[in-house]
Image (cartoon, rainbow, N blue to C red; front, side, top):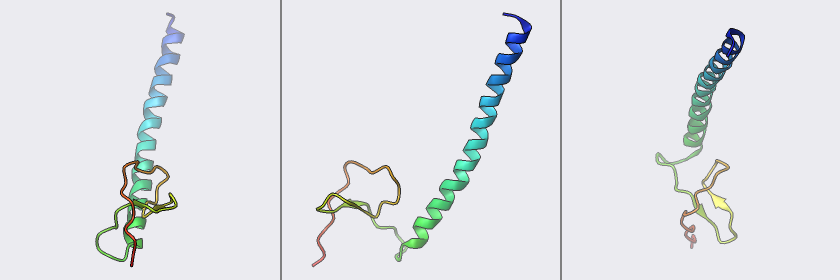
Length: 77
C-alpha cells in the first residue's frame, strides 16, 4: 500500500464518519419536530394507541412503518 492509497482511504473513512455525525444531528432535530407535531395534534394529554380498522387501514399512526401486532380498533357505538 502506497502513501497515496493510505491517504485516500483515510480521507474516505473520515468523510463517512463526519457524514454520519451530521446526519445524526439532522435526524435528532427532524424526529424531535415530528414528535412535537404528533403530540400537539392530539387533543388529550396522552396520545391514542395505534390500531387497525376493519378495512385494514391504520388509525393514529403518523409514520410509514406500521407495527404488525397492533390491536383492532374498537367500534364506537
